[in-house]
Figure 1 (cartoon, one colour):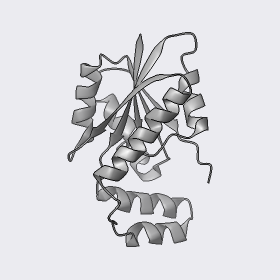
Figure 2 (cartoon, rainbow, N blue to C red; figure 1 turned 60 degrees about the vertical axis):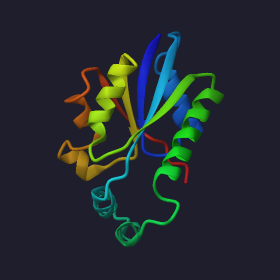
Figure 3 (cartoon, helix red, strand yellow; figure 1 turned 90 degrees about the vertical axis):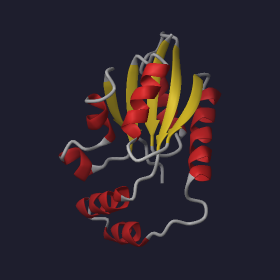
Figure 4 (tube, one colour; figure 1 turned 90 degrees about the horizontal axis):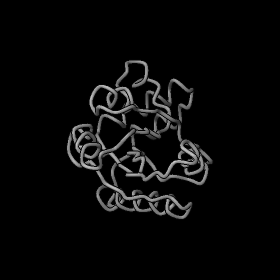
Length: 158
């Protein structure tokens, strides 16, 4: 079985599921969906990305946004469960894990080793500032996990 660790930042939609399940057609695959913990610096980076895309209202909202009672472990678990359910609904074998703590890449490496993963797929929204400086999840994972890392952009159906 070909095992893929799939790092996501939000719930997989139907297009995302089609994309990741079609990458290795004809090969029996399993997915370990990983949701990195939220870091405070990501709000600033998201705001900078919005400025780069001339989405000024969104940039202001990113900076002003205050965590609500729904933020945290419960929201992360719901996001993870929904993504695993979406993969399973498409017929894929899938489980989910979160990466608590300051640096989720250490946990990601442990997940890769524990599941004897063959590949990591990072499926996120574009993060132009992080990508420019090679500080995005995929660039950092390539230096850390010891298996091939593929970066894909999540579909935005809003």
